[in-house]
Length: 213
Image (tube, rainbow, N blue to C red; front, side, top):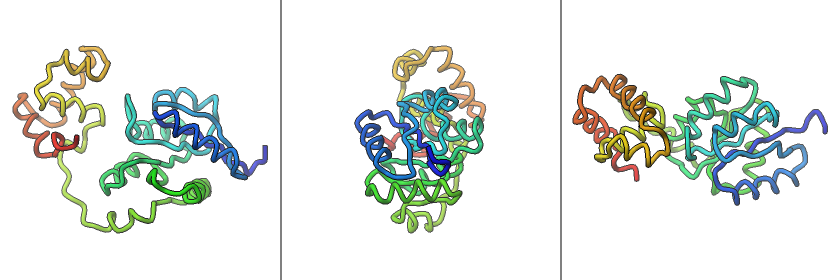
């Protein structure tokens, strides 16, 4: 393998997409498919084995999700670059991704050529942004609130609580233990300074969490 070869770890919960990206990487000179993972947790476990230069990362995945995954990947291996490949093209998603440590952001509707261009740019230390997102990022940033300080999993717990789910129902929905849900709920209440379920519901409504799906 040439020292100029860029190793790419593909992280997405859709097997068909991972297969397509693997084929693209295998036929592109200077790029090498380092491995694949179906979740951020799996990607973290495979970093030592796969030794990627770039992690090509989806945002919406089961478990911790891409935002938290990007943070942990950069914490564990600061030299690894992170390129987000997402279905979402909202400015807030882009800002959160960069705040979490991403080096580039590309939408899944992009052509193969643009993905290759983004990978090469990120590998050279540049920040890459899908051209169609530039205008959206130029728009004024909406004021943030305390809900923005929550982790993706805490936001999901807050959303389900606001919808009236019990701790047991949330545990079943997220496939975690009730104790884990209780821990998340306590963290949410602390971060939001909410002393009751009603207060948490108000935060969820104000943040638009109940309109998200």
